[in-house]
Length: 365
Image 1 (tube, helix red, strand yellow):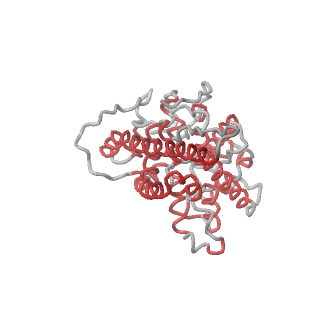
Image 2 (tube, helix red, strand yellow; image 1 turned 90 degrees about the horizontal axis):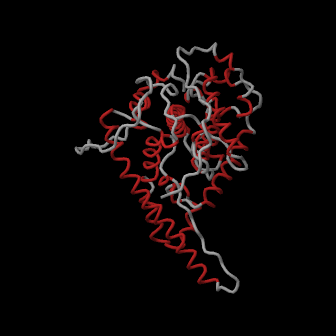
Image 3 (cartoon, helix red, strand yellow; image 1 turned 60 degrees about the vertical axis):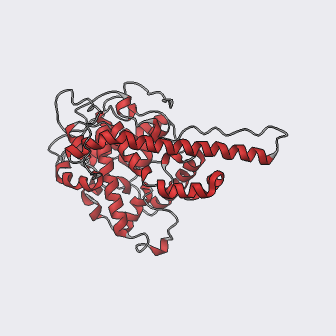
């Protein structure tokens, strides 16, 4: 969403990211991130800190390396399965420890959120980086899944890898094995492609954005399509039950939350230097998946180009709009930038600076 229309939705952000909690009496030990180089505006791109450490989330929010034993010729099958089970067990224990570490790391940030009022206020004041924002959001996502995940883990033990891939919704992200992540994304991309077949090609993004300004402007079928593109609901729901299951109102709410989240994330990403500052690997792929892009069979260069195209398409459309998921990325290039200037936009949207360098893949400590 462009800077021009953010004030209209400013109060709407707060149900998404308030994270209400009792005010901590202890003083936060975390220092506030670097503010604007020219002073304290709330814009997305005018206050840039070109440092990958301000853009990329901590490695504890990502799955740890999974080293599986190799079965040598002549080895018995049963002992090999035991070793494999222990490797998975160690992987899940590391993931659970990282969930706890992330929760502890978010407490100073949460204290700043409590004092400021909401995380949106921190973004507008330039007092939070994308690294901290992603840490809070991912920690909240993972912490909510710990009770059920822990119960399944205690019941099945070493056999959990055979069960958990079928119930990814209850697994914290940093406890998901690589094969599980790849499988989930492959299924999502199949569903996404099938859903796009129900919509015509060649529609103009700017014209559609004027008609579909917010979630409430979408039909029930368009809500289901946008939710499918973003992976907001399970593919196990029979299509014949829609709009009763999943309920349309529930999908509208989840889509609205994703739009608010992405708008804040786009502002912080632009402020940190743009997609070129994202780390190679999972961090880059997660940013693409969050915005509804396919990632399989794509190079990192292409993913960065599509993320830059996303930000430009938002500017062309006049801000965050569901029309971005009703059109294909290939159709965004056909929307001329000059036409975007005719739409009401009192102030410019964040601009994306050129990538100063290609970030290298970080190693977990």
